[in-house]
Length: 587
Ligand code: ATP
Ligand code: MG
Image (cartoon, rainbow, N blue to C red; front, side, top):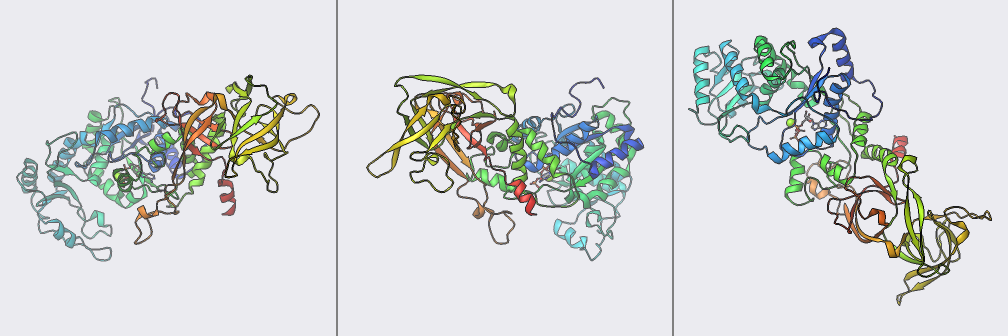
């Protein structure tokens, strides 16, 4: 196909795909020649919040399946519900999908674009005797619905004539009745074992302005009714969603099976597909949601965190939102690899957040530029290094990627090292600096500690050393070895930086599930630690937000958008130590 920007995207390098039931279904459909051999999916977020890591799973499946099969994927804002949607969310959703590496087919779609078609179809259902206007209020309707063990009772209005129903429905549309007085119901089966099939409401009056259609409508379709129609109008072949919709599937099918001719014509009008495209009959398929330890994914709760200032906005780097993760330094490759590893199943389960971090480290290890920064500086003076002299040493940017080259790191008589890299009375197996001990300064020289300077309280404020000029950038010519290598920054050249160290936002594995405990009480009070006065090597002065970095021996970092010229701010993306293999072995 020669069209541009119609395919699902070029998501770049991702983990090798494993067979799963949705891949299998699509492969079987293609083999059977269903839908003219087309694969067309959609991702339908409700624009009432920012996308999170759970949505990333759905995005990777929806766009991924299309991409793998030369198909298309639509981005559709599910704005059937009039009150809540906001433009900010619509924009953030598009940005996040693109950042994850995917392109949607044609323009962004809106469920509200199809209000007219949904209404038209409702009139056809009424004329076919498949829908009726019911005057029961919601309480009465609930009482008639029955339970899981008892059948429902038919509404007294169930057998109105098509003429009467059409008249009442048009008057509903014209705004003759207040909200909550009448509803349009599908006429299916009050005895169905599936409660969703017991004459579900498909339209109700609702006086509420819509962010796109304004006050054009005083009645709105219900999601279960509108969603299959939207899919069919867009020519969707595989409507992939999460498990909670499985029980709604018979209704999805019922809606589409009433008047199939309607959809054959409507697809031509709305889908943007070439007119000769054969009509699709979308099939809904359900997969398990992503649940992650130490993480909440309810949009309502995430919104609460933002609104109540418990985090610093939707893109707070501690948030499980795509924008928060991006700001924190996650790469889209890491997220896509994670989604592939999690797999696609029909069983709800809880995924260890350590797997996500493992995928992140795996990608950062390949792509992050190595840099040196000292988080807790302690001064080190090299007594035999000439005053006022300086030199530049070659440092490797990435041991995993020789093409990343090297950089020059300035060296001089006064340096900073980490406080934790010195012990006046060394513990057993402590191979870093201690009085009399020798270590290697990364990329520079061997130094031996000759003494310390202390303040009035007895705290070490300065370390005195001598260096061996013969060890420049390598080993000692006499073959003597050192066990420790430490990082450092030249004091005269250091850039002062702020570093933000993040920990989990919640201190319990499954926040928000314990009866009687508010999830906010389960937040980790130490999820953010701000470290100021960090000494960074000069190359870090103008790090770009999002560029992955490894501060040697300290962790993975990236510059934050709060950085100012000469005053960089860094987010710790993740620590260096991977706990995933250990966890995986345990289980
Ligand atoms: P809410 O928190 O309001 O229930 P939602 O999860 O239904 O929101 P939507 O915006 O409607 O959010 O979701 C868009 C799509 O993303 C849906 O198809 C939904 O099934 C999927 N999705 C949402 N959360 C997850 C998750 N945790 N794992 C996988 N898919 C998800
Ligand atoms: Mg939803």
